[in-house]
Image 1: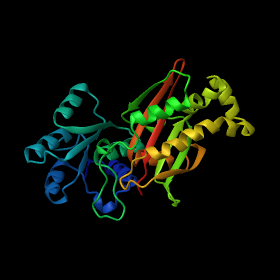
Image 2: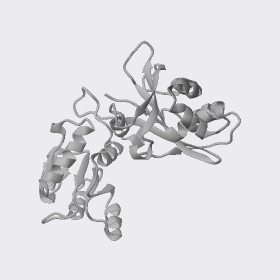
Image 3: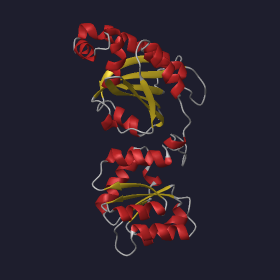
Image 4: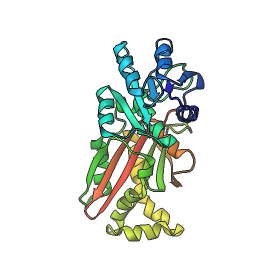
Length: 296
């Protein structure tokens, strides 16, 4: 449910929700807190996205009333120009799931929506995946540590799991490993490696000299040689994916691609099971791996 007195903002929020894969009929938009309170019993939203400053009932008063009327489990996010710390504290005390400040980008809101209520399941009316925070790990830290040790046998490194990542924190160009079930062509999972991570991994064969790696990557004749150890790493990732049906995956291709092309950025924002690991070595990094399960 969208609650905002601005038609333009309601349209922008609706666009972000539909970009996550939700059908138009799954969205109910109103222009005031009072209208929302009247509609909430029949519409029964999983998530309400509300403004703060609206005529009549403010967004915060709307949320307080919503809770008093027994809707304690409904998740609420705020999209607002309000930034005062006191107001932010009040909002969190009333169980606000997230606060996004205006002006905002569609992909920022999309990421928060998917994190809060998951992604819709294709072909099943009203069905959706679990929020990303509730999805079981598809690749564990121990698994990734073991593979990195094999790829960097003589180097010290640090590896940690990162809670979430926005695409803007990845490099403009990334290496993408695409995985499918045996005998199938449709991609079920991805391993995305940003350029800092790629140079750290490939640099193991170049004496740790990332400058040599970067120079080699810019030369088509040397690129395959530089990427060979990284491709082996991507091949070894395949058995680690633990998808629900337990069917094995294989690496079907790996490509250097622009992050902004081919729907990759949307896949990062609107899919489940996403896990991010940050790799560092003394004097280098951090680089990032992203593992994610795709949903259609």
